[in-house]
Length: 258
Ligand code: CO8
Image 1: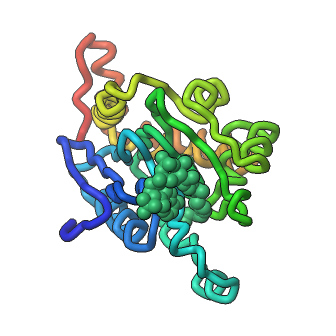
Image 2: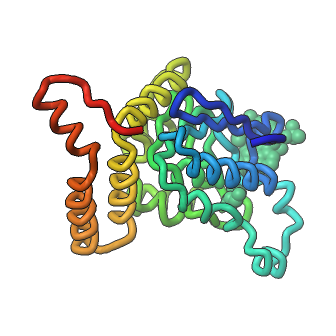
């Protein structure tokens, strides 16, 4: 990608890292950033050299939400006709490769929703999650009421969304919002290690696993179990399965097809 102005893209072997980069605005999400993020994710998803993606921010902020200065003058007609907010959020949902959110500092409003839209969250010990939209006279608009509720349950989601309070890293881990909490100095290495581990396995298994876990969020248990079973069966048609199991039996490291 060329001419990125609000995000930084770096690649480390099979891992791509996107760093949100509007430091003066605490990485507030505006149209330019969301367009660059959507286009970059789409191109990484299509790039056979990339197996896993990390989205991160700065020590102070993952993202402090949608840009309030842009929203301040928005009216209903424009929001509705231009489908404001959903712009590029559906793109994130279509990415098939695993995405890790590495969150330090503030992840508020759309920032929290962006982290929730990723496949898993690793947090620094200074991370603060929140859906403070109620303080602005609105409600979350990019999945906060849905994904946060699925992640931490109704009582805590209501608490956060109705009071606008922030949740620190320890509570977020305890509540199931984040997978791991580490000191800030270890955040990048931890996310990289996770991404590299994912990248070291067969690509097909990773895509299929992500797809199947996401079905659990949206469909009934019977439908989800059937989906999982069919995916499980289909992986026996792959060379990765032959290699993975042969490597185990021969007590050697598997060499999965890239
Ligand atoms: N939008 C625009 N600018 C912001 C935002 C934001 N969300 N957050 C911070 N900034 C700016 C501030 O205006 C300030 O700029 P300036 O220096 O020009 O005044 C700069 O970033 C630094 O911020 P502060 O001085 O306020 O820094 P503090 O350390 O004192 O406070 C906070 C940090 C607590 C994070 C505070 O900035 C804050 O409360 N920010 C707003 C958080 C918020 O309400 N977020 C929710 C927004 S609504 C939303 O996200 C709806 C989601 C819809 C879907 C997403 C679509 C993309």
